[in-house]
Length: 87
Image: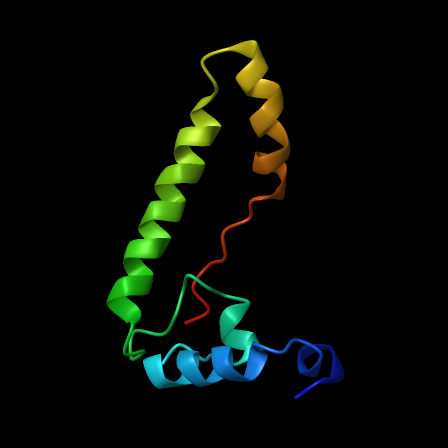
């Protein structure tokens, strides 16, 4: 475990729990979430998450209903880049 994680007292318990749930992914898979290979045991759940994220981004891109909302969401849209399937 890297030193920065070792300093967090709850990290070992968290990692055990995620591992037991089948939710402990390597960094390269995490970088592409919510997209996972179709063979992943949680693929259905991650497809729903990807759909929700796509719908949320679409909603935000359609535009705010007031000028104040526009300025509060524009920074979010600049940062959102949904990953694409690598397979």
